Amino acid sequence: MLTFPLPTAAALNGHAFGIGAMLALAHDRRVARRDRGWFCLPEIDLGMQFSPFMLALIVARLGERGAHEAVLTGGRYDAAGALALGIADAEADEAELIPTSAALLEPFTGKDRTMAAQLKRDLYSSVLAGLDE
Image (cartoon, rainbow, N blue to C red; front, side, top):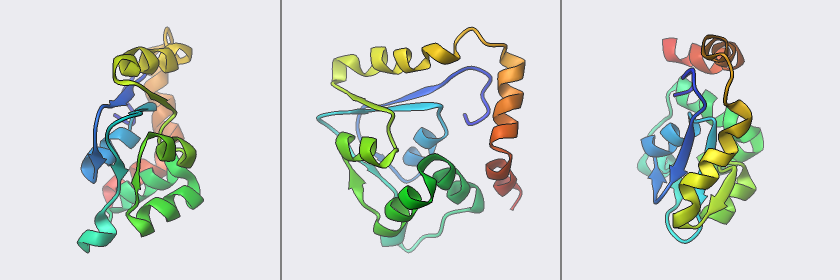
């Protein structure tokens, strides 16, 4: 998803824990449902480590401060919390999840797909390098 040649949005209709959270972070935009679901990286409470790729993706999306918070607390973030930490780009009610997601992708639409994929690979080269480890 991180280098998909079209713009992508994750409409988080419920919980996004562990690998579901990672999949959400791999999208260009994320919209969290206001009244339902949490985003959580529970690995610290499960005694698990992140792969180099996963950790690089978390830092790339949340910045060092947000990654530190989410990774080391295993916190559960509702829509407002996800928005505040930079996990989500927007929040919406259930009926508005898809329209809000589509609206967030407007600036990316109509671009050359080959160039978009290449620029995404370049932009996230340090994250993708973690796949080799």
